[in-house]
Image 1 (cartoon, helix red, strand yellow):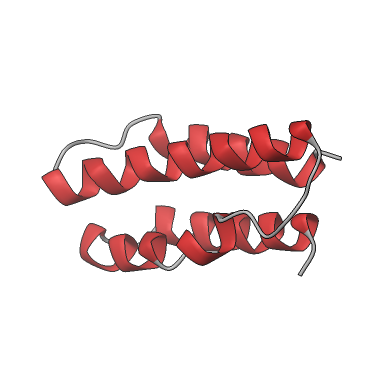
Image 2: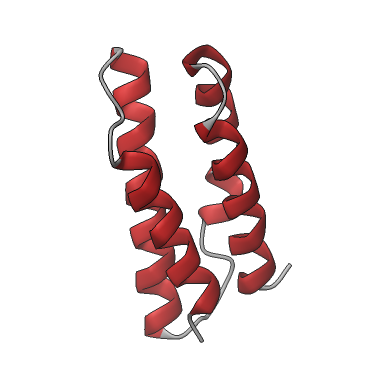
Length: 88
């Protein structure tokens, strides 16, 4: 699967998880790990965008796990995934 397709899949799951209750959203985010891992050589722009998406997703996961508010975290993760999708 190429980077754009991976990022599109991540976006779809993030948008669905955003509207799910926390106990359902956390496993959805955990399932993204395989998609956001590097799968070979890519441009620096793609690697940075993927890493940004990964970090943003981790921030949501930590907040959900700790029962903390996720205000602003979802939009940051979605924006990061969109940057990854657009990266070349």
